[in-house]
Image 1 (cartoon, helix red, strand yellow):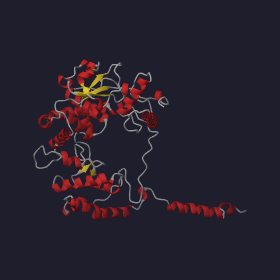
Image 2 (image 1 turned 180 degrees about the vertical axis):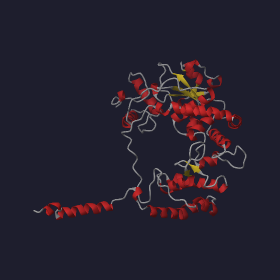
Image 3 (image 1 turned 90 degrees about the vertical axis):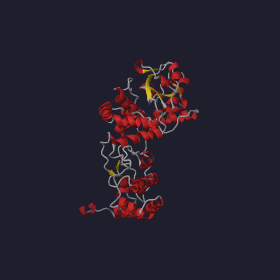
Length: 424
């Protein structure tokens, strides 16, 4: 056999390699390897034949549509896109994902920076904030804290065209219907003359202006507090702050009440009592031995009103009694940690408070699959753990605490490695 023969694949092997290569060419290409110009043409046809008729039914004029979509193309850099002809990606496998201590959410450096800036701005806008509190019942420090958390007090860059973002996601995302509705609402804002398409800047998710409202929230809650003829949440600080307060008022903010209090829960009081469905008067909690940190008294106005236990890290971190206003803060961002961040930042702005007095201790490095297994085992035993998703929400935490108590353990109300395999 010659050297040339050694370099040549046999006939059968050549045919096999050719078949593999041909099959590879026939496999579906990744989403972003598609023919983008062709998808762009489909996008323009979708605007003309699908979106525009629906928008016109909602009262959007041809002139507004032309102005809004002039030069608009798809933004291929956005997440969660599903171009035509492709299938949505499978939900990311979270079974090996670790979750960290809730304390990781509370960057002391960031909180100090926001508090320092927030105090100065609370002084600068003291008169406006006083008027806002009179109108909506929401304390100025709460409004300023949300302003800081959402947009860095209006300094965060909003580089995206909201129309482009919303149109891209309405055309090819995993939540097309939701973004189509938001796009129609954004076009309604343009139709009303509230904002021009060029000024309507937002985040990569379509959230707008200094309060980071979606268009639907803008239409419901944005306020023209400076009385210039339209709500301007991009450039008018009074409008942005009043709009935040109006949002909270409409979601149920209770005038004259705080968001909550850091407390000490004695070891003889079980931590398995948290959640809005187990509310009782603050005086009742105090009567069981729960005290505020630093020996502060609960406000008299709160003693007869309901409060709820909150232990986001179980016995491994700060403990709280929160008011219904805490759950109103969660309407802005549905996260216990977000609401605690806002509450703590507001206390720093108004009262010079610092970090929570009890530290966030290490909770280990559990996997979501471990927590998921615990949740499934608890459900099988009749416990209500809320969402069976591998994340320790309050129903999971209190169910764990109840199970620990019933099995002769001191309740910690938080999943840890020592519980793996014990709950069967």
